[in-house]
Amino acid sequence: MKAPHTHDWSERGNQAPQNYKAAIETRLGTARDLDDFTRKAQFVNYENFRAMFEARNANLWDNASGLMLWMSHPAWHSTVWQTYDYDFDVNGAYFGCRSACEPLHVQADPVKWQVIAVNHTRKALKGAPVRAETYDLTGRRIASPRTARVDVAPAASAPAFTAAAAEDLPDLHLLRLTLTDEAGKVLSRNTYWRCRTPEALRGLNQVQRAKLSASLTHVSRDGDRRTATATVRNRGSVVAAMVRLSVLDEEGARVLPTLYDDNYLWLLPGESRTITLSWPASALPSNPAEAAGGGVQHSSGHGARLSRRHAPARRSHGTLATPAEPACDSCSVTAPRGSRGRPTQDARVDRLDRPVGDCIARVRVIDDELP
Image (cartoon, rainbow, N blue to C red; front, side, top):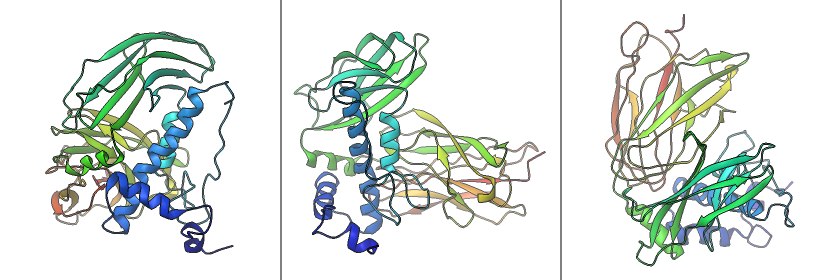
C-alpha cells in the first residue's frame, strides 16, 4: 500500500490534488495553514457531495436509479474520496450526502434553479407546501418568497417552481428552501449559497461577526450507548454558516464514533436547530448528565471558547464543540442549572484569534447530577 502522502497528494495520478486545491482557494481564498485548508475543504466537500446525490434525485428513474461512491472512506487521514474518516469521524462530505438522501427532500437545480420535492418513502406526499426565501449575509430577506403545494408519489419527485436569481440580487446570497407538512412541521430544509462567480463566495470571509450559543440536554442511557440533544442558536444579527457540532472528551479529543442526525448548519439570525447525537458509553469514563454551557468561535478572526475558570470538585467528562464557517461575535454562554439548583459549571469565555472557517462552541457535561 502506498503511503498516504504519495497517494492523496500525487499530482501524477487520478487524484489531481492541484485541481482540488485550486477549486477550494478560488472559492474561499488561499489557506493560511493546514487547519484553515481542512476547514475550507469540508465546506467544498459538503457542497460537492450534496450535488452528486441531488443530481440523482433530479433524474430519478430516468437513467438514474442509484449512485455509488468510490470510495466511502480511506485507510488513512485524507481530504478526498471519503464520507467518514478511518477512525469513524464524519465530515462535510457525509452530511452533504445525508442531506440529499433524506427520505423527504427539497432541492434546486444549480443551473436553472428548478425547485423540486423528492419522496424516497413508500407513502405519497399530498399537498405539501414548498417555500423558497432569499437572504443576504446579514439574514435580511431580499426578495419576495415563492410558495407552492406539491403532490409527490412514492419513490418519485415533483416540480414546484423556478427560483432563478434576479439581476438585482447581490453576487453572493442565500436561497433557503423548506418542505413542510400541512401542519407546518419542517420535513426538509436546504440552504444554497448562490454566487455569480466562484470568487464571490469569498464574501463569506467578510461577514460581520455573529453570536451563537449551544446547550446540551440531559443524557439518556440506551443500552451501551448514550443519547442527548444539543440546541445551537444564532443570537446575532448575521448569518452563521456551516456550524459543525463535535463531541469532545475532557482532554479535547473527539469522542468517536458519535452519530449526529444533522450537522454543518446554516443558521439565520434568531434561528436555532436541535440535533440528536449519541456515542458509545465506553467512549467516555462515565455517564454525563448536564450541559454546562457554550461559547462560539468563527472565521472572522475573532471568537471565543468555553473554558474552566476553576477546576470543579466534581468530574467533567464531555464537551460539545461546534467548529463552523465563517463569522462570529462575542459569545453567549449558557449555564443551565442542575437538579440541585446550582450552575453545573463555573466557566469563562476566552478570546481567540482563529483562521477562516472555524467556529467552536464547547459544552462540558458532568455526571454528578444523575439520580
